[in-house]
View 1: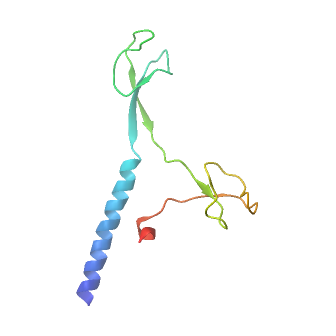
View 2: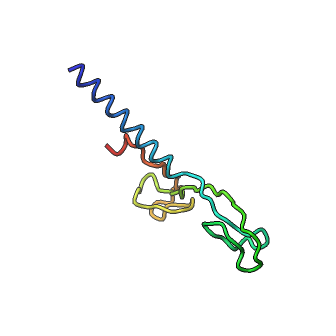
View 3: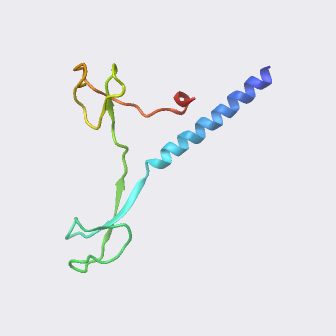
Length: 104
């Protein structure tokens, strides 16, 4: 019985570590290229600005997950910005991302 418990804990720990690494891999820096004279010109690879011919410069952009807000009394109510629940008037709270442990 003790061996089974130890094996179960080891498997769960490995699974949690894999899920954590997966979540971290989604929040990486993204590289874009832009013109210093025309910041609205954006490309995913190096090249020349189509407007002025200058070299596009590399810029790192941090990708962030969108925040989601929900009502504690009505979890089906969600919003991309804070506010009030339309059903009960309570403040919407930031929804935390689900952890691997919560999905089991």
